[in-house]
Length: 387
Ligand code: CMC
Image (cartoon, rainbow, N blue to C red):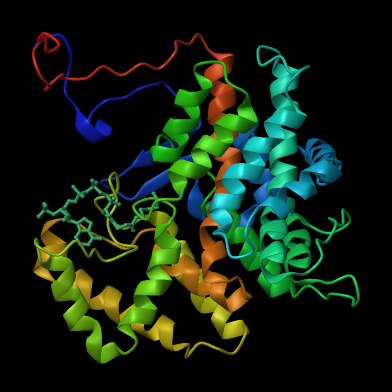
């Protein structure tokens, strides 16, 4: 009707200003607060990246120590929250449980919360960064019927997560430093990605002044879909389904068939029309980790590499500028670490929480407006109710 711009999928609409993350999709560049993702993945660690995303600058040594200590002080969840898990079926998808338990945090931190107070917002961020690994590991432990492991605060963020996942109260658990470092890198590579579907969801939910924990639960729901964070789980399922390198051409043809809904999972991106820089680091990490574990001949890795090569040379993918994205190789590393496939998207949610809460915080730190998209109405004209 000429009053609004019609832009389904927000292909060309900027909904906000942001100083957090910059993406140049044509050239495959991703910067957090100006720092290239490759350098952060190589030289930094996840909690430092969290500090950077939240505060805008890298911490000094003293600021970092204080930040790490603060996060450590918030790692436990309220004992009553542990009871929530019992309400779920043991075979429930862990993302379904995460939507529930992270949303439930709002019931514990609501009454005295003032989202207009920067300090209150900061504490919400600390709580989320600290408690997400605890909750994620609890989902896994619940699914296999093992007791929950309390966090151990003298361990690094990645080590603590692995211990809560794979340790038991009856035996000491030695965290393999190679796996802990790989875990940390996966966290870094997923930390933020500007206005993707889940981050936009968190900002939109937050724009009404809603409780931040409830907003993050909304982000988790948006992330779950296979077109977004659910792709990492879908990639491994796809590689399983392909089963053997000789079946790759059949799956490539399926992906190209306009009448077949199948898509090559872990391929393509709305913004990148070039290599996803995260995928490059992920592939390198995958080679390193599997090499260090002595499983570089992993059949799924071999299929993934051949699939990537064939797709990159195929006219269909070349013409549409479809390249591997962050999810293409992450699942292979997660599997090598011992994480079950249905937990992959939970790991993405855990890592992306810092991005979500940084955007939520940025929204509330600047002049803002409730988000309220318009629509083009295509339904019935006014008509009378039958007499
Ligand atoms: N396999 C086969 N064809 C594809 C694929 C794919 N993975 N991705 C896009 N296309 C085709 C699509 O069919 C369309 O072809 P045509 O022009 O002939 O109709 C063209 O490429 C453009 O696709 P689109 O759906 O308009 O692109 P989009 O920007 O709306 O979608 C996407 C981006 C990521 C949803 C899509 O590429 C996709 O579904 N990829 C597979 C799922 C995936 O790996 N998602 C993870 C994204 S990265 C991590 C994250 O953000 O969570």
